[in-house]
Each structure stands twice: as structure tokens, then as C-alpha cells.
Amino acid sequence: MPARDDIRIAVIGLGYVGLPLAVAFGRKHATLGFDIDRDRIDGLRAAHDHTRELSADELHAASRLRYSDDAAALADCNVHIVTVPTPVDAYKRPDLSALESASRAVGAALGAGHVVIFESTVYPGATEEICVPILEQASGLRFREDFHVGYSPERINPGDKQHRLENTLKVTAGSCPASAGFVDALYRDIIEAGTHRVSSIRVAEAAKVIENTQRDVNIALVNELALIFERLGIDTHEVLEAAGTKWNFLPFRPGLVGGHCIGVDPYYLTHKAQAIGYHPEVILAGRRINDSMGLHVAQRVVKLMHQRGLQTAGARVLVLGLAFKENCPDLRNTRVVDVIAELRSYGVEVDVHDPWVAPAYAQAEHGLSLVDTPEHGRYDAMILAVPHAQFVALGSAGIRGYGKPGAVLFDVKAVLAEADARL
Ligand SMILES: NC(=O)c1ccc[n+]([C@@H]2O[C@H](COP(=O)([O-])OP(=O)(O)OC[C@H]3O[C@@H](n4cnc5c(N)ncnc54)[C@H](O)[C@@H]3O)[C@@H](O)[C@H]2O)c1
Image (cartoon, rainbow, N blue to C red; front, top):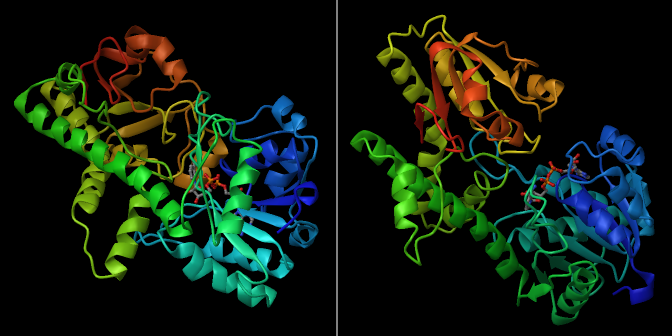
């Protein structure tokens, strides 16, 4: 394995996970940030991070970090950290294509004694069953004899300025005790909160995938409670607040579950479970409930409009927020699109406003033209779908200003002091 004073790191895939990691290592070690997206590399060379996770000053502080979109540059490195996306396909099956192509690129650059660390979220076993054979084939080297592998799952939370890479404890693992020690020491260089070393790569993979699966199932439970309490005419948030006064009641809130983690990772686990003959029930039931919440929001708004004598065909509804979560420009797997599609199926004209999202991104991903400045007094209903700070600052009165007299205001995440309805 590389000597401590000869560590030359490559971070492969400079997204929400890879960039903060490359910047943290680039303050201490010679680091190459590699991405196949030329625009991303051009942006970073100009100290611009479109994910808004890092400022120009933070990028400049990584004085030993350089960027490249040329895979040949990987040949200068002896520690390769893979942080490429692991989404699901249209049938909710793991899409490992980026991981496989990154493994091929790393394999082609691999030398004896090198270490390859995977951070991408996968199912238990994927690193050794899928990535390692590709590394061996592309390099002609032998796993554990010529090169070593590690796994250290990321816990980054886009848009969260409190829980950062450096102050969040990190799980580490290696393919043998020596590589586990190397990987652990490497991360200790940058993680002030320390590390938690586990006995195998499969344990680390499993730990990551259940962090998000647990959240998904817990949110599904409160979403189901919201569906029940709505029928009973009880305010879910008041119930949750009351139950939350007990010491062991967990503080989950109902909502749309989007993003590329919580709504995606459980499918990696269920895929593997099914491959070994176990058919998960609770996990997939949770997925079904969470994926139905967009429809439910739209149907409640339509019902409220009808109750007020408002026609839905030709009505105008303003949806505030398109990103998958607040204070973040990320559209991956946003479930706000379900609200929009369901409203449109009733003949509603939907305007979408999101000051965090680049209009070209919304157009390219979802064919949506964002409204830059919604008109006051124009809408029959307003849905606060994503509680970005700007919308919360507007408050109920500010948001009601967009509506005609008697317009409906629906507050999905219950952040406003007053609204006609919430989950
Ligand atoms: N974002 C999060 O909150 C988060 C948290 C924990 C874990 N993860 C996991 O980390 C991984 C990366 O997620 P992300 O959010 O950073 O993704 P991302 O989409 O933000 O970034 C991925 C980057 O990888 C690049 N890329 C794709 N294929 C490549 C290849 N073959 N070679 C080099 N670069 C390539 C893309 O151009 C992109 O810039 C995923 O497995 C994800 O599940 C993400």
C-alpha cells in the first residue's frame, strides 16, 4: 500500500459526494478530481460549484487539488476513491452502469500496491461481486495480492450546512486487516469526528443502505398516519407533537420522499434480498406509501377547491418548490412532479416557481418551464411543496398574496403559521 508520504489520491465523480471529499483531501494530499462531465470540470476550474455545497473560497483552500476529465490522468494516482451515482432504472432496479464504467477506468490505471475505495451506495456484496472482477480484468492484477479495496459510505446531506463531511463520523472497511487500517487512517486525516471501522466491506455496504431504508420506512409510517388522520379529521402534526412528548417517540414528519438516496437505496437492498430468495414486505410497503404521497397532495387540493366551488378545469395553481428538498437545487427523483402531473390530469394549469433550481435544469429533466416571478392575485390555489427559506420568510400572508380571494393554500411540510390544509 502507498507510503504515508506518497499518497496521491484520485476522486472519481465530483458530485454532491465527490467534490467535498476531493476538497477535503486536496488540503492535505496531492489530489486529482476526475469527472467525465467536461462542463463540471470547467466550472470547478473556475471555482464554481453548481451544487452550491462549496464556496469559491472553500474550493481555493484545497491547494493540492487539480481537476481533469481525462481518464489518463488517473495513472499518476495510487489511491482511487469512487463516488459516482448509483441510481435505479425505470423498473426500480439498481443501475450500476456508472459504477462499472468508473471501475473500468480505475482498473486501466491501476498499479501494484494501489488501493481502490468505493463510496457509492450499493447493496451488500456489490463491491466485491461487481467492481472487483472489473478491476482485475481491466488491470490484469490480482485482488488482495496486487491491489486492495476499501469501502467507506458517504453520509453527506445536500443543503445541510451543519452536518458536513468533516464533522460526521465515517464508517470504514477494507478487504483485509492491513487495507482496513490504511483506509481508516486515510479518512482520519480529514474527518474530525473520527471513524468507525468495521470487519468487512459487506458490513459497511449494509450499514449505509439501511441508514436510508430505516428513514424511508419511518417516514412511510407517519405518511400512513397522515392518511388515516386526514380521514378522521385530526391534525397529524398536533398528534405527532403530543406523542413526541414521550421520551422514545421518534420525530419523523409526513412529506414527499424524493432525492437519490432515501427513495432509491431501499431498492438496492430489496433487489439483493430478492436475488437470494427473500421477498421483503415492510420495506416495499413503505416505498409504495411514500411514492403515493404526491397524488394524495394533489387530490386534497382538488377536493378543497371543489368544496369552495372552484372549478378545477382551467384553474391556475402555483406550486412553490420543485427541488427534492428545501434549500437545495437538486431535482433528482423529486416527487413534486407527481403533484404537478396529478393536478394537470384534472385540467389544472400549473405554474412552478423555484428560486433554487436552474430553469434549464428543470426544462431538461422534466420539461417544465419555471415561472421566474409569480404574479400576485392570479392563482386559485398555492401549494407550498418545498419549504425553501425564501418561502418560509414570505409566510402565509405573503404566499396568499399570489392567490385570488378565497384561493386554497396547502402547506405540504407544515412550516407556515396558517394554511387551509397540510399533510
Ligand atoms: N448526495 C448525497 O446526499 C449522498 C449521500 C450519501 C451517499 N450518496 C451516494 O454517493 C454516490 C454519488 O452520489 P452524488 O450525489 O455525489 O452523485 P452526483 O450525481 O451528484 O455526482 C456524480 C458525479 O459523477 C460523475 N460521473 C458519472 N459517471 C462517472 C464515471 N464513470 N466516471 C467519472 N465520473 C462520473 C457525474 O458526472 C457527476 O458529476 C451515490 O452512490 C449516492 O447514492 C449520495
